[in-house]
Image 1: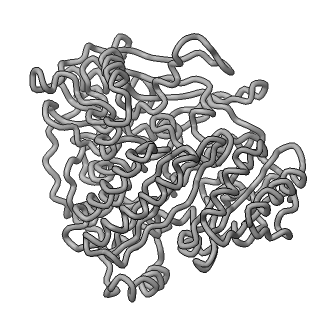
Image 2 (image 1 turned 90 degrees about the horizontal axis):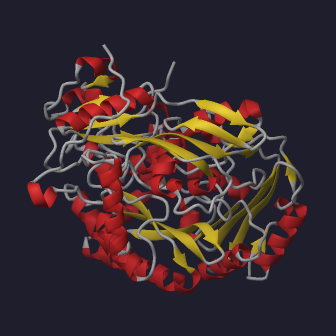
Image 3 (image 1 turned 120 degrees about the vertical axis):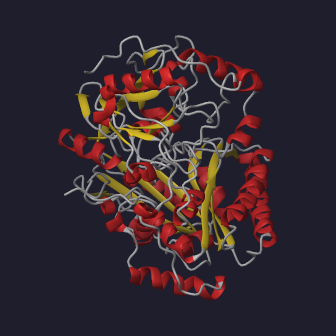
Length: 573
């Protein structure tokens, strides 16, 4: 029996916080935030006031298309705070008119052809985990309707190259199912974003997702060998190569394209033997600044720990790793081939040189026999992204990390504003950015009547030249004005991030929410080049309008032109 996904919130209905756990959480924050103990309930899909569908699928596509309220509501939003708030209100601003579930690439092409013919927008959809408005069918004027293209049926590992350590995998496969299919081969992709449970390979590629490794191959970019995509103009498939210097990379054009150029349908990705040995553990620092210095030293040491995540004192307390008196660094090493004592000893010495208190008993190399890693579709609780399964503090952080989206949903139902944002910045500008963002968010919270709230920070990825700070905001929400309240906080933080030399996103993607800052961050000539590329791949500008670039022709003639028919789309009777 398949598990039911929540139509309005994160993940699976049977994994939501229990009433007991939610009550304990409310009691913890109630005195500070003035919570009354009540919880909002999401409305039944049957009671939603959805706009009538503007489209009807042609006979050739009816077998894969649906316009039921349940399908339309479940595909109307991603999983950001703004999305959850609107769903709890029963407010579905831009539902898709049709949800199409292609069975293969021919179906994908046929849907693109039909939408091009009639002038409908197409929004590719993987796991629906976007937190930046990337899958919301808010396509603007000029389209007769919007079709969400759910790739969930394209969910298989098609081929495994044991010699080259690579696998050809369809884009719609969810993280746990991907690992389940690689496990019998003794292989793993080892790409574990926090959204792993409900995100797909195609989504990771389209958004340049950041995964498990904190210092090595941090983004999915590093794991892609070649990409295949169906666009309104035809099929694009790059050659499988370990590396190439032959001009600008076609893979790089599709990586991060967010569905604006076409639909990623499969990819060859680099896999590896499943890890067997692990070492590492938690390290405590008197101050966050000391921890930052230690992370920089580790990132520049050449040791390349698989995990190197620093939590500020408040973030550590929120995640059950500390009591808010110390910053906590989670360090982990892993290998499929050898013990790790030498690496762990050097890392322990490095962090100790910067004031870190190492729990030495936890830092010995542990032979797990391959157990304790993410992979099972039935139980992502086996996750050990820290590479330190035997370390108590790391284990507490791990469990908190996996459960965080469910906890967020429960807090929102209680009237708490909970949201995250992230960036990356060079080490020389890190302090300025961290202090500036923290001050700006606290000021915005105070101005919005949420002065009891707080902002925390952790470093999720570390590079020799910089790091990726990840911020979490928790504050009492202003009932009825949650969106306006959050928008003020988000704008304040984003302005400081970009003004301090950071990127508007390290791994959450641009979507629709980050467009104002992305437009200012990218070079103007690159924007023109991107528009030109979209005009080639997507002549009718039907693919995910509103992300990355504005629709061509919107200013000149009030709407996008019609797309030509796909050159090889089959005709189904």
